[in-house]
Amino acid sequence: MPKVLLVEDDEQLAKFLMRFLNSEGYATDYAGGQKDALRLFGENVYDCILLDISLKDGSGYSVCAAVKAENDTPVIFITASADEACTVAGFEIGADDYIGKPFGTRELLARMKNVMRRHQRTSPLLQCRNVSVDPIRGIVYKNGAELTLSALEYRLLLVFFSNKNQLLSRDRLAEELWSLTKEFVSDNTLSVYIRRLREKIENDPQQPEIIITVRGLGYKAVDA
Amino acid sequence: MPKVLLVEDDEQLAKFLMRFLNSEGYATDYAGGQKDALRLFGENVYDCILLDISLKDGSGYSVCAAVKAENDTPVIFITASADEACTVAGFEIGADDYIGKPFGTRELLARMKNVMRRHQRTSPLLQCRNVSVDPIRGIVYKNGAELTLSALEYRLLLVFFSNKNQLLSRDRLAEELWSLTKEFVSDNTLSVYIRRLREKIENDPQQPEIIITVRGLGYKAVDA
DNA sequence: TCTGAATCTTACAGTTTTGTCATCTTCTGT
DNA sequence: ACAGAAGATGACAAAACTGTAAGATTCAGA
Image 1 (spheres, chains in turn green, purple, red, blue):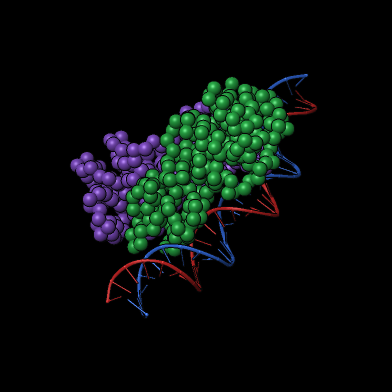
Image 2 (spheres, helix red, strand yellow):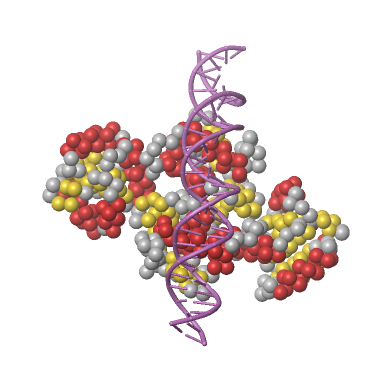
């Protein structure tokens, strides 16, 4: 029976979630504030922590930071809205996922299962900076959140990530993507896909940090 | 310098290909018929064999069979047309790819590089019957030929292949594909994707041999 | 055999992907 | 600074993808 720690300011919501999670077969502990949360976290081992951002006695961020400093328990942030700024800040301190109010119980369950499954996975992830690929599931994560790539974007990313820190010529990349195509593919098409990929995985596509242009030679994915 | 054995009935074409392959940096041996081909194959180690189906003194099939009985040298069939019957027959005896006349030199090179790269790969392929997935390249092969799947079809296939011979409930499958979607996805949608996947990977989608329906329980991918 | 449920199949509309073009920007060598 | 090359970007149409609905088919149990 998986153990969940629910840290939530709003008692109304907390009560409801507790009942729901218990009915779904999760042993749920409840903390109304930061202090209780850290105490419970120190005393128990949880499979997942649901963490509201706004708490009476401080921010959920510090709880998350404390958790991640201790071990790798999955943390899902509950945010007042799907405010991007919040979520980004959350991911930077190691959150695994977030969910914005209002959310459905179905979505919550799915995200919980998802982070827990990811957490106990053994097969290797391809990683580069804040982006990782689960090649066995065909899923891409940026800061722990799932990312949707098209088939070609995904293949392009795989080429880069499985040849990390290596220079890849435009010819090589084009061949990896279109080698079996009979028709000629315009040289510029690759540029466009590079840009589309950057748009999805880079923090600032204008100043890429992952897929780097090496002028005259090609591109490379740099790790650090 | 990679060694290639070219087995081709048409001397005109053979001459042209020899010249081309040599100019591209492949040491190319030439055999006009089955007998020469087998002799050369016995005397040399090749990185790739290009094999015309119609030969003066017999069929290319028997050459392919002999090659595959001996070792695993990649074989690419050259067929008079992209006749599907021929190609299927070729794959059954272990051909790695085929190319139909008329073909461009660029396509030929691409296919050669492709089979050679596949041949020397070390990372594991996910396989089930005559379909295999290269998760590191995000490419699916059926009978050795590349197959194009959409993003969702690909993810569905990965779920099946990484849980081979296991029964997967419809719920489980739907969750793998749409767990992070907020909106509800119609139950029938999964049926449709199963069918689309079958259409691409099964020999006879009406009588699936890979993705099997287990009525009332779900589906499973069976290996043999 | 009949009936209802589960699964399959076809068709369809809205959306996304894909590849190209034209244009703009950035870099390099002179 | 200038010119040319390499790469980036925005816009666009054709094609493919995605999800739904409606009806057909198959199967298990009465």
